Length: 334
Length: 261
Ligand SMILES: Nc1ncnc2c1ncn2[C@@H]1O[C@H](COP(=O)(O)OP(=O)(O)OP(=O)(O)O)[C@@H](O)[C@H]1O
Ligand SMILES: [Mg+2]
Image 1: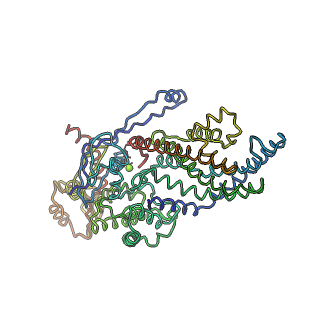
Image 2: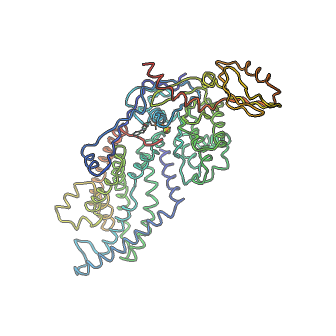
Image 3: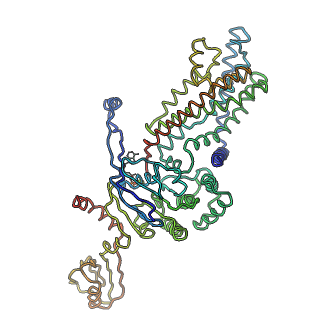
């Protein structure tokens, strides 16, 4: 079952160009100049129900615009989309019963009131009966570990605590799909982990589909099964996260320490030696060209190994590389 | 319908959580009335009469008390909508299974209820001190009934101005113009009875008197025939403006751009 189907979705924003200076401002009053921004260009993709899909891209790539169209808030300039069988911008209210949304940069909980009040209000808005709402709140407070936070006015919560309440609120009505626009923005490592765990749990236990946008490769690694990378409103990469890692995380970083001094002329074909110290070396190689086996054999032949660390470059780097390579890829396709 | 009641309640609770704001606001009605008492007291003295165009000093004060209650208690939907469009919060409002306009209507009701109650309380006290006992119960009854239509008319106008925020960034200037119309043609500054015939004619052809003058006038001089007549016209305007608002909403939905994110 597909839950989202998007074909050639397109969005052009017209913004009035603000001229500098009085003369230009007056002129602009009578004859405003418009600038067109193609925020989303011919976007096509699908998402299966219950899937965990990551949508990543640099600032201004068109992620938020896409989410807004998929929830029906914005009307597209062109193209089609179906979300859970509804055309979002035509059947926004019907769709609203089945999806949850969180826009990480702004609150939906009533700011001056405790979160529990908003939860109860949402129960009414989504037409749940009071008993059901209460049961659901109990479940969510446990899943998101927010029991102690519910009675505190939202404005007094930390960002991390608030975000947990925000995401929990978006799940109150048992949506089949949640769309999260940068849910982890501004959170520290622990708070991010907290949110990710809770989202993963909801996905596993209730099969809720998750489409999330992020700048954080950590969100991808921890949560998503599949990733779509967009830049300048277009898809530049689309694959399983595991494939992304396998194909692009091929370079390895190795650090070794020996019991004896290392020969200064340490060298191995196909391996880039980054640093040679008195008792240790640091090197990088690509598993696509040089076998791990060969490297290990050589390293142990040099002396007695005391310590060894092998690490992947951060996924961030890989993604940044994909952004950089994207324009050439696109032009080749044309 | 239960959900809209819940929104009203929520906004009531929200206001009660912040009593400072509306307490300050309701004191201002006392100050207004005090200033107007001075102005009208002098005017009546200089004119050397007990009544001007059928209205006594006491009538004037109670008229102004009701008019100020309406002005200070009217919904501020325009500001809320344009604020939500500017900061992107509108995304959440549109993403819920309720009608956008009904949401704002309920929110406005919740917002106004407490303010109107407070203003009536403080206004009653101030006007009583300045001008003697309040009008009859019949006056109260007619005022409260026509207050409902008046509030809805204010809401429609404010929401229409608010929807303009879907198109243009700034809507404050529209509100200023609108306020001037209510101020003069709505009878906030002066009861319509004090206007020359021709200006009364113009005003009565517009919705503004039914948003302000109608409840205030019936309050101080209850008149059964006038009540039914004004109530009828008021609700014709309600129907017309609700219709206009619904059409405007359908049109503006398509052009909405949500900032930020
Ligand atoms: N309301 C608007 N009016 C005009 N242009 C807009 C509007 N909203 C977005 N844009 C433009 O559309 C493009 C895509 O914006 P969008 O917010 O979708 O990016 P994003 O991928 O969410 O970026 P970020 O990671 O910074 O949140 C940007 O160039 C932005 O300037
Ligand atoms: Mg964004």
